[in-house]
Image: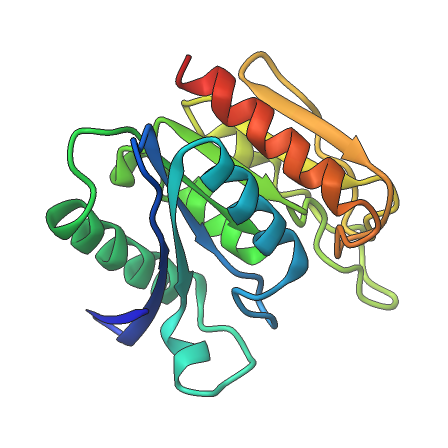
Length: 202
């Protein structure tokens, strides 16, 4: 575990190395959670099993002890600073896959071009914002997914309150039992991540 300076305070990075590394998977957490969420733990174990080293990134607002997330521009800037540091200090000539759960998945999508990721992993992508009482139906966040120009895996609970994003030519959507937490079938989360990573670098 180490701290990395960003424009918005220190981020904390939890490293999970592996031998004969085929790539790196850099994962961010959800808006109100941390890097110990069960689906992130399952994805980390699956990636290490596939010989991907993993970096779990805690955003500066979480390191500072706050639960309310920072604005998107701050999340993106801090994420980019961490990925740049990892590229300079740790990640050498192997592919980098970016990703995260929920809010962290959105950050990875928005910054995929800038990080040079060869793939994006989305766990429980929050496709539809919560609907406010009396308000008009919320607009989807499909534009964030569609803007990604590399292969993308979305692992989504069939009862996710934030909806189900569509698949596309380069975007695979794997539906599993459960809700937004993805806790109901963690082996299915791990299997989807491991199989996709294997195919991505094959």
